[in-house]
Length: 218
Image (tube, rainbow, N blue to C red; front, side):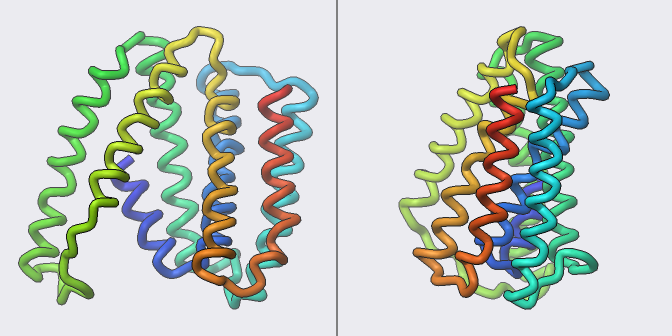
């Protein structure tokens, strides 16, 4: 998950968030395929249609992205974003294995997860702090949003982990519900960052959401 975040953060730095959010939201599609292979989950007709709609919407998004000067095919930062998304899918499959098969408790996994994160990110922090990775682009500035984001992630992960412990919970459905957060990133790109051509991506974003709804209700 840490490597997924690194790839995603680098990609978001160079891509419009109204484009990066929808691309990232295709994660449920890849999770859906992984759940078919690994856990033997079988789709209903509506779920299969949802997969097709998601793929078609992703293609429409690629057309809309060209107006921002971003080509999804052959673009380095889009490739970073896809790598981050796929690594997140692998993490999601492993989560389902830990909670659905091994029946770990959420606090146990969260405790070890944050210890591992500290161990992985500490060398990167030291490299940045001491200039070993090149000159820092900006100094560190404390904001109260930092612990706020950390607390929000803690609560979100706790609820997500507990949902996976339900034997009837389908990973493909749970992940699809989580990815409706694309609405937040898309709206933020339009209203907060004032990104150009944002509304041209609306049909593709609506298609992605429709595909996710079909996967969930199916």
